[in-house]
Image (cartoon, rainbow, N blue to C red; front, side):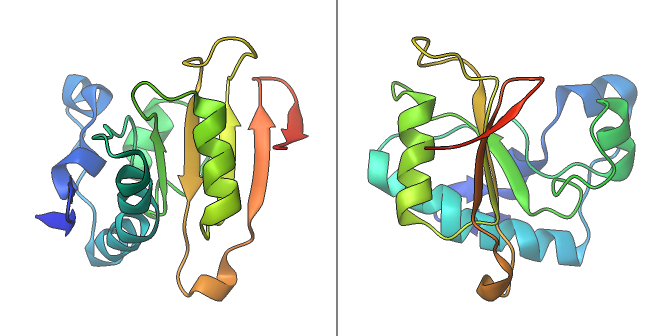
Amino acid sequence: MRLSENFSLWELTKSQTAERKGISNVPGEEETKNLTALCRNVLQVVRANYRVPINPSSGYRCLALNNAIGSRPTSQHITGQAVDFEVPWVDNKVVARWIKDNLTYDQLILEYYKEGQPKSGWIHVSYVEPVVKNRKQARVYDGATWKPLE
């Protein structure tokens, strides 16, 4: 099933952990609707801007999978509203700043990024409908502290 021009439901639900642990990571109708909005309003726009394929590392996570990887029970991955990804050949901080300046999003987190190491960490971004509910929170998280993304 296609969620947007270049993103499929399979890409946003695949998980090595789920496969290893025998967890069925299949979203319901509401979660699929949220994934579609996320792909169309964030991932597809980022892909078009940088003109390279993007391989999401984590999209939808059912509660069992979310628990298995030790994520918080309030994670927007559970609702299909969040994705983690990188853009090949582009500094993660550059991509995060571009999203911050150009897109509507709920949360944007540059996770585990180290200055001077452009491919360190990854970008976590969430999107909520209706659009007016998006908080536009942009932060950097190094594993211990939170800072604003500037």
